[in-house]
Length: 111
Image 1: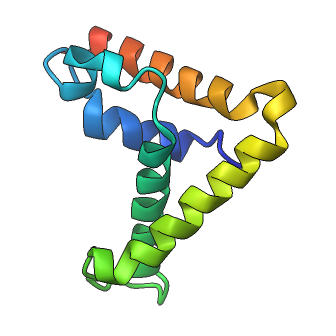
Image 2: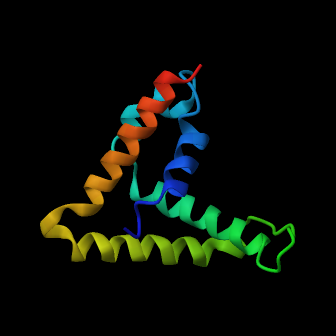
């Protein structure tokens, strides 16, 4: 599905759940479930990485709110629309819970 990608899970794992002393493991109640704003942030970061390689060679692009604020807002808005459209199925909530549970488990097992 659109928001169930391994890249999104790897980004969340690497940023907040890398090991037992990482922020997502220690403060997991703030990440349970993964907030929609956090998913929008990760999607924005992924888009920046894609932009850096858009010409076939890596080009440094500044990751700033001025340059990527609109990208974040677009992802956040899309997530909200998705949540509203899928409300009867609580699909986005299930994705957020799964992202957290998977990341938390990986973080607990890592040293």
